[in-house]
Structure formats: C-alpha cells, structure tokens
Amino acid sequence: MKLNSTVMATLAGVRSDKQTQEFLKENLNHWKRYGYGLWIFRDKVKNQFVGRGGLRNVHIADNDEVELAYSLMTEFWGKGLATEMGETILKVGFEQLGLTEVVCFTTTTNRASQRVMEKLGFQYERNLIHADLHHVFYRLKALPKYSI
Image (cartoon, rainbow, N blue to C red; front, side, top):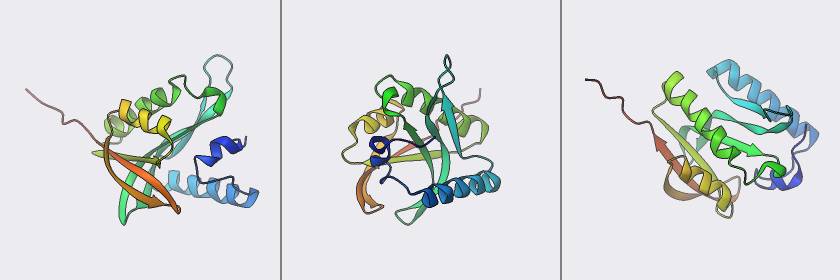
C-alpha cells in the first residue's frame, strides 16, 4: 500500500515506483544485515494498515546512528498511535537489542512529530540539513540499569 502524498511530504516527497522498489530492497537488506528494521503496523480491530515504523541505521551529519522511524496514514494522526508505536519500538531497541541510544529527526515544521519525540523522552540536540531540508535532531539515551 502506498502512503498518501500528505504523509510523503513529511518524508521528503512522493517516491516513484522505481524509488519505492529501491526503498523496499534497502530495507530488506537492512533486516538481513542488522536483524532489525522497519515494521508495518496495523489497527488491532480492523487489521487496517496504520503506518510503518522501526529502527534503522543511518548516516547523518557525518555520524552513524540508529534512528527511531515512524510514519502514519493521515487518518490515524492525532490519536496517540505514533507515541504508542515509538514506545514499543524503543522497548525492543533498548531491552532486546541492547542499544544505548537512539536518535530521531524530522523537519522543523513537523511540530506533531517533534511532540511525539518529546513525549518519548528524546532531547533536542541541534538543527541540521538532511535531504536538502531543515530538520531538528533529537537523541534518547537508555537509562542505566541499576543492580543492588
């Protein structure tokens, strides 16, 4: 299923069929290489496609990072699902994969996504240019596990 143009505007624009196939191929290769990547999320009641999200390795601002990525169909915006998805993904990343930190970034105009990041505990780090667009860059460090 293709994401609509409103959603794709938050992801650097609508992709051609060829670009979509390349995106899917890259994501499958990411899963093979790292053992994690993007998932499809579905509505629990109707099994309807809600969006996609997960963890992926990215090279951004001259650094290798693990990114929390998420995107929802417009009809699911504003219902808390992005935060719920993010919490689940981060739990897998920190508790099962042993990650020590995760980054998240979005365009400077995407306040809804910035609010999701802040609700998840991400801290603003800096502004940057990514895909020729102005972005805000956030980071979340895993809480240390204390032993008695």
